[in-house]
Structures are given as structure tokens and as C-alpha cells.
Image (tube, rainbow, N blue to C red):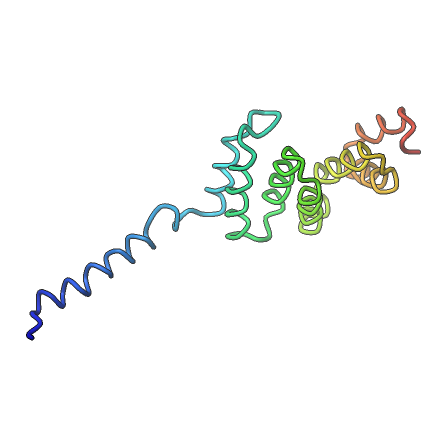
Length: 148
């Protein structure tokens, strides 16, 4: 049985074309910023309109840029919106590890702890946020008797 040059060419060219198409597709060339921007389009000013999709986009951004404190913070917000508190707190923690002066991460974590009656962890976060320049939560927590 003789194999023609044309047959060999098709056996090589077509799979090569498919592989190149996959690796050159827009999904493969998207940057961390592109994924974060996609998640941002789901933010309506108060919450994510589709938090599951936001988590997916932000997870892709984090895979491409694992030291992006803002992406972790935003994903923590989306997890919180879905009631996935352990994941939310883990993302706020990572956000703070990556950017120790991330005021809003301290605030969000403090709000979570204080809302769950955990003054021992919530008050230090509110105090840290105040030291970083935002005392609103600490003042409110003091008025309600949560913090000293």
C-alpha cells in the first residue's frame, strides 16, 4: 500500500492547524488583566450580578498573576456574596499577605468577623484599617460596643 505525499501532508497539517488554533485562541492569549476586567463588568456597584462567573474569571486571573492582591480581594467579595465564608476569608487573608496595607481587605474581613460575633478577630482588623486611614468601621464598632 502506497502512501501519497498528499496523504502524509494532510496527516501532519490538519493536526498542526488544530493545535495552533487552540493555542492562538483568544482564551489562551487573555491576560490576568483581561480576566479581571471581565469580572469587573459583572460588578454593579454593590455586588456581582453573577458571582459564580466572577469567581471563574478571577480564578483565571489569579492563575496568570498569582501575586495580584486585588484579584484575591475581589474573588473574596464574590465568595462572600455566595455565602462561602471560608473561601472568602482565605482570599482576604491572601490579599493582605500580598499587600499588607490593603485597607479594604481589613475592613471586609473585620465586617465578616464582627457580623459573626467574633470581636477577637474583627476589632484588630477594624483598628488596622483605622491605622491605614479608614476609621469608619472602627468608630461604628465602638458605638455598638463591639470594640474599645
